Length: 458
Image: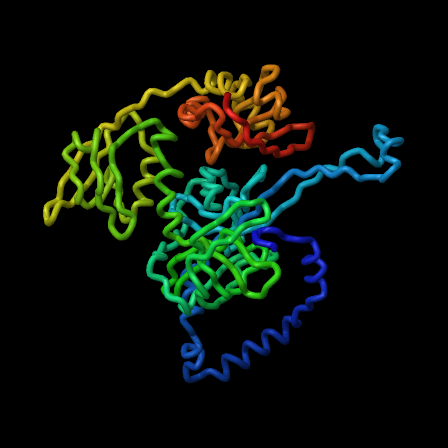
């Protein structure tokens, strides 16, 4: 059973060579004939809801190129025992491999949603828009349990965001639209219906996804991470898997699963060690469902409607989470609220939570010592990782897993820490025997390998 849909194979390039474009003059002639044949507005009558969905949403859908560094050793069969010479045939062949997927803009500040399996093991990520513009992106958080990833476009700017719908009211037989990057054919649109809901699938690696949307919309390798849209142009799912032994049996993660995961994936308690004491609804205009600690002290009450933060309009819970990621821990947060018909302002002073020693936790629980790369080292290596392993204790979990000095940590669990404060936040609640996923870069001359290994805490 072939499940994930992000792989892209070189045979497509050969297939493309067999596809011959029409001569330019013939194309012009066809278009001219079409215009001449449409003096009464027939073209407008051909505009279907599918056309309108595509035109409305295509600018918020992006293609994602995940660049991986690969190493291949050629085998000589039984001669391997005799030939292992420098410069010989068994020397590793190193090359870049680009796997393709899809994503959509979650927020206009440049936050992108895709699948975790699209971005896994990528040394570099590139986001490509419908107009052909390309932007490098950094991973922000990964939820491998639900196959979700959030990226951030490095370049500052405002980008066209998708409109998020809901997936608790889906109808079997409802028309849906997928936009993606199947087999490298950028911004391909396909349509179909919702075939079933609440499906469960098991992958070859043993991972199980539940509560999925089943659709007969044509999706293929490269569609992974792209939006499944309803006829209003709202994202109601994230395309994630196909049945390789069937036709038009695809699966999408319900958008409600993403919405429920966002508070943890974008948590300022983990990222900034700040506590506000606020919990929000995530449908429609955000309302306060819980106010404790600093929020309660500021006079905020459950049922208050959140309207703005530091003068910036808040229209969805996503707006609020993104705003908090840029929060200055030394400044109060000024919230505009609505209680009934009355407008209120509340000033919340975030409570700073003591930050544990990340370096000490790495040493105590896993047995290795790290330091932060200097900006010059990071620029020279041109990688996103920031934590260099300098020592590994004998007999430690790290040593048994093959970790050695010189590896660079770029991911711990779902997150991508850039300093030891973030490491401390991630590891403070790790218990004895609990496994934590570490992903590292092995830098070898011009080549970078990506390694992943779960380490049990001691």
